[in-house]
Image 1 (cartoon, helix red, strand yellow):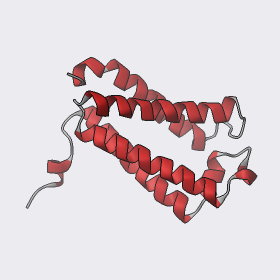
Image 2 (tube, helix red, strand yellow):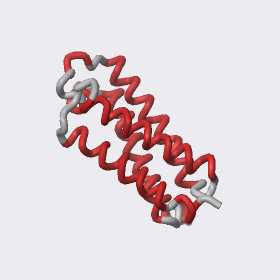
Image 3 (cartoon, one colour):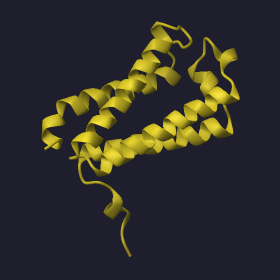
Length: 134
């Protein structure tokens, strides 16, 4: 019988990417089941959040989950690592522009959490690039 530790990556950054990937899958499912979650994120423009936009957000979350999960298990692969970095940069850009440019969201826990995860992950991946990418 194999332990659960056998499928968990050894590196700390890989474990983080796997955790973030898992959270994105949960968020994807949540957006397909009940689009009110998206209304909590986009608090200023909540009326414009539709089931279609929530499902689109769910697809984005699933896509980012695949990229980050692949990166977690291929942490030394330059392309996988850089795609992970781009996924965080895109997320950070999206949430920041929704708050500061389009003004469809305000700084509530629903928007602060992804801003913290995206920015800290991106900064960490930049800082650790030489350690992981060979």
